[in-house]
Structures are given as structure tokens and as C-alpha cells.
Length: 606
Image (cartoon, rainbow, N blue to C red; front, top):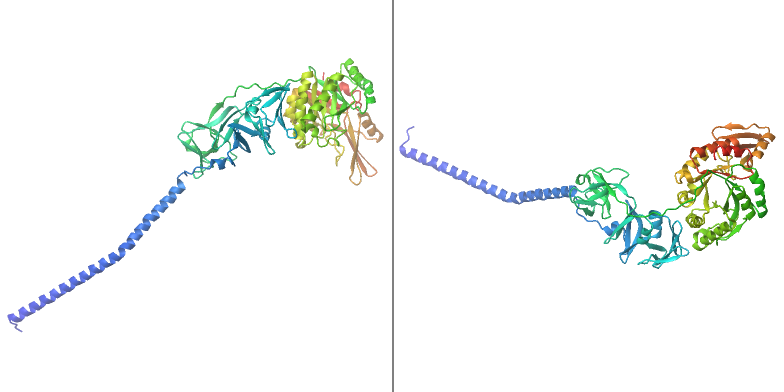
């Protein structure tokens, strides 16, 4: 079909119009689409911002948490709380590398220590008499005495004065000026205020130290989050303290300004040594009487005045005896009075036979009267006892005094040791030998303080017997060889060998255990013990374990046992005395031995 030009033009116009509409429609769609996108974007923008903010905040919180976790704390410790100070007058006390629970006082710029602190940690030789408010210190030949509230004190009763009050009382607590203690004790000290604390050092020589490589924070505990106690400057040294368990990356230290804490290993040097110089201090010399021969002493039991006459017979049966100790003086009350059986003829006869007299002082006879031992806790009664004993010693020309206090308890032990100190002063001034008897060392009698006895007394005697005491529930030896050697070894840990005398038993116990298990015993001398064996037709058998002859028999349902003390068993003990180079031998008691025992003793003490 042939179309004319008009139709073609109309059709062309129509197609153009359709394309135009299409273009306009597409544009409209695009516009609408852009509009929708803008709307969506406008709606999304706050959410994106919120998300971004959350991310930023979360990152900041995580960063803060990480920083808080791994960065060192800057918190400063409450040092008053660290030292446990309750008021401005209290002062914390450090001794060497140890912080004490005890607190002192800082009064008028002067440090005071509790008298118990001094006893426990600084110098146990100071003695506080609470009943008479007196503070004492025993020098070799003088007794120092001070009273509460005074600046005056006496040395051998001669008045001296300090420029401060020496003792101050606060209720039941008593405090002594550290400067007064320092007069008689070798230590240095330094103190600081705000917070109040004092550091006492009496261990001199080499200390382990570390050096701060930079400014170092010393923390309360081992950890970067622990509060800071103090700061050590670069180049300063700190004492290294031991720990029960090593803590990785940290070292426990004592700073020069008196704090115990921890520093990081990476901030300090390797451990080295620092010398703490000892101050100039003249230690008192407690001189003693030392015999130029091996002591051979025996105790002579005297029960009344007439019994003194037995010395003629008793001494005639001995050989090589250098000293005899009669039981003469008895503590009779808590005021320092004594009963005496001393006899001048006895002393004269011993001296004529070149035997010294070391009279025994005992607490057994009147033990029920003096049970609380106030006699030792009170200064006036203690010194009355000293004066009474010295007066007797001078009156009768005694060569020595022998203390045999067997009922001391832990409560009375301090007073007893102080009594030994005070008696030693008077003995030293008068040339009187002082010897002290002691049980074999054991936990139950540790408070007898053999070490201090070894300073003040001339001789410390081990009563190396009564391994199985008479009231024991089981039978056993009086002095097995192991028991004796252990007693010697343990005593030598506290007392120099040249002051130690070991005592041996001249007696044996004959034990009976009945069919009900009840145990009884009787003590007897060497000849009587032999006769028991003979009478019962029993042959003693040597026991290597106990170092004694042993017998056992059964009769009418009871078991009888005996570990015998005789020449061979005594010789085994004498071998130990020689082996350990002791000052001598003592024996309990005269009259229980056989004559031949003295020849055995002379082989080892001459």
C-alpha cells in the first residue's frame, strides 16, 4: 500500500512523541529513584552515625579496658594503714628485715619501744619487773636500774641521769626510750614521721641489695595494680628479702626509708652485696672462773646438820675428786629467805684434802611453799636471796654455789634467769664459782635458757640421767648411752664446751610391772643392784643399744627389769665426755658408787 507523505510525517511525529514520553517517563522514574535513594540515605545516615559512634565508643572502651588491665596503677597506698597506726603517737617498728606487730611510741621527738618488744626482738637481757616498776640490766659487775617516769637511773647504786624520761607507762604497757636501750645494745636505728616508723638494724656485714635502674615504684604487693608504698630514686639501693616462694618478675625489698614491698625485676639491677658497717660499741665482757683441771664433782646429799659428819667417811672412799656439792641451802619462802645446813668443819675438812666445796641451792624441799616463784619475779626478794647466799658463801669460805632449780616453769623462767645474772655479779666480785644444773635439753625445759646461763655462769651441768623417771608409766633405763650423747650434743649447741660438765648416775632403778600393768620402781646403789641380780639368780646381759647391763625376770605374775649402772656403763659415758672435750664430770650421788668406779673416772679426768 502506497502511503503519501503526510501519513509518513504523522507517523514519524507520533513515534517521536512516543519516544519523548518514554524518555520523560524514564527520567521521571530516575528522578523518583534518586528521590527514593536520597530518602533512604537520609534515613540511613543516623543509623550509620550511630553504628560509627558505637564502634568508636566500643573501641575506646576496649582500649581503656586494655590500658587499665596492662598499665601500672598510680594509686598511692595509705601508709598509715600499711603500718597499722591508730594515732599520731604510735610508731611502727621494723627490726632488720621484719616488720613487727608491736607498736612503739613517738613522744617529744623520741622513740620509745615496748619493754616486751625489747625483750623479744632487741635485747632479751633487759628485765622488766612489773610488780615493782623496775627496769634492769645486768653488766658483768654492776646492775643497772631505772624506774617509770624518771630520767634518773642507777649503775651499781650510783645515780646517773639522762636528758629524757627513760620509762613511760600507758596502762599495763610500759615503753622504754630506744636511746637508753642503745647504751647497752649494739644496733643502729633511724626513724621517720608521717607516717611514724622506726627501723632498727643489729645484723651487720654483707646484705644482698639491688639498685634502681630508674625511678622505681615500690608496691605493696607483687603486681602492677598494687598500690604504691614509696618511690626509690634511680641509683638507690634496696635490701633484698627472702620469700617462701619466688614470685616471677618481682623482687621483695626493704627500702632505705623503711618500707617492705615489691619492685619489678626489669627495673632493677642484678643482686649484689652491700656492707653494713658495725657501729663503735664496746660489748661487756662477762668474765668467768675456769679451773685449770678437768672438774670431777660429786653431789653429797645432806638431810640434816648431823649428816655433815659423814663427809669424813664419804670422802675417804673417793679418788681424784676435785669438788663436792653438799645439799645445804633451801629456798624456804617467796621473800628470798633460805634454810641452811652449812657447816664450817665440813668445809675445813674438804679444803684440807684439796677438795673444793660448791654448796648446792635447791627448790625441792619447800616446793609447795614457793610454787608460784614470786621469789624470782620480784626484784627485792630476788636480791635478798642473792645477798643471803653470798653472805653464807663468804661466812663459810665456800668455793662455789651450785644451783639446782628443778621446778621452774615457763612463767617463772625469766625471773630465774635474771636471778642467775644478778647472782653471777656478786659471785664474780667475790671469786665464787657459779654452776647451774640443767635437765637434758628438751622442748619442755627450753625456757631454762642454757645459752644465757652459759654467758653468766662458770659451768653449766647436764643432769644426764632420769631418762626414765621414777614415776614413769613404763620401765626403762636411767641413762642410756644415746640419751646421754644427745644431751651433750644439744647442750653444746647453746653452751661452749669448756663450760659444760656432764653428770652421770651412780644409781640404778629396779622396776616392777605387775599383772595389772602398774609400774613401780626403787632406786639403789651399784652394790645393791648387783645383789638383786645375785639374789634372783639372774645373769646380767650387756645391751649394746643402751650401753648397759640388763636383767629381766618374771615372778608371781610381775615382770622385774633393771638397766644397771656400773663400771662399764659409766666408762661408756666418760668416753663421750672425753670425745666432746667437756669441762668435766659430775655424779649423783656420793655413797651409791663402788670404790672401783673412781679408778675408771681417773682414766678420763686427770
